[in-house]
Length: 595
Image 1 (cartoon, one colour):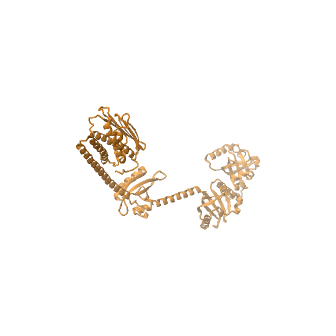
Image 2 (image 1 turned 60 degrees about the vertical axis):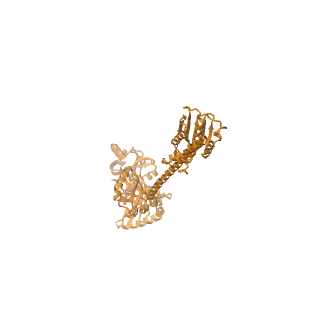
Image 3 (image 1 turned 135 degrees about the vertical axis):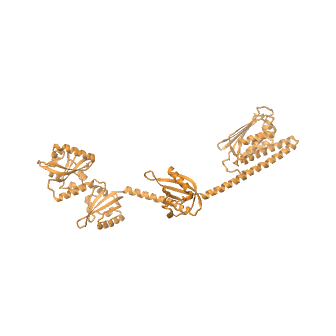
């Protein structure tokens, strides 16, 4: 026995309360689970005689196979089945009845509902009408839509269970029903006006409106109001069907809001933006920046072929279109003319927008007018070329002037008969020559503030050895230089420093003429510092005695180390070794003060 309240919820109040429509509920094993009073009256059995019994009690065992086949058909195709059956009542009389069977759910279990819609039993016209109404209401109870019927005054006469649940009401609330409390005020006025017009024209009303649920939240529904009229064309009732479209409407609203934001951003952009289709027709966008820079108004271009692709650029434009359709995007710098014939240099970026099938729907293009930038670049390139030429000439003239000084000093050496004086003149000549060689490398280089150290020191050592006439004394030199360039402000004092060290080594370190005499110079970068190590394998000396520690050369070395802000360490016991390091200022300045 199934609880009657659950039966009422499953089949609906109208059918449950009907006194003239027989119906029964059976299990899938075709046993009676519930029968109403009209069904008992129709068959002559009491409720207790049927519930729990097989339907073979009415059909007979011979028809049970057919009944099970009908059940299997229904379970497979889920179609309501209408069939005429002949059954035996309790007294053995044959009853012919037309029944309709559908599947229902009660308490989480599946049952079969069978309604007798016609039979050999006498039925009044009222019973037939009630059967039709019950059939309609049975259908509406199984639909997911909100469905209700109103009388001519707008009072509900019926609501399906979906509607009652949404509004949080029951059938007892119909008498005090007020539609306005469930609609937004503006929506209610619109609906009332539409209702009056539709009633007069006998037309249905279709609107998308907001309806408030039992928790006070508004949701969007697609509402169809269908009027019914009597023989005098007077409105008698209204039937309403409301379909939940809240997610769709809110998604559309969000999309519309996003589109408005996008349009605002595009219109406010200082960069020209427009959209075209695959044929080159301007579609939706041609923002104010495009109007300002290119001269054509939006109303002149929308729906027309893009004006930038004039005849002189059409071949290049077609190539760009093929590329963007092949790759999905493009980025290129090209030239175009505006409406007034002025040629512009533009930086073009374009991308494809695809439809749901993956085909190109339109192309979004952004342009940047870089005409002035390119003109400035040309001017800067010209200025830089002039500057480089001037710098090259300056270094060349400095080198030539220093070369003249070197020559004058050489003449003084030739004319002098005093060996001490000759030695000092040679020292001065070597110092000037070390500076001149730096400028010589600079004016022949493409970078006028950086010196190629390896080439410089190799040439410097060979020149000093030649100038001091030590060719007959076998002194080898080894260079280990991994620092590629050095700022001229540091290269000159470092060159003078190595010159002093080299001069002293050639003068004092090698009294014996052997193949083992060697001078080594290593220069390496490390992090942001430069590490230098100079050494010879000569005889060495005592720092507290001798010409080296008291002479001008030593003072020059100390001065140059100070100028380089170098930390140094000197060893003179076994040969001579000087290690020092200083900060590399190459990346500190783009251009040397001297360059």
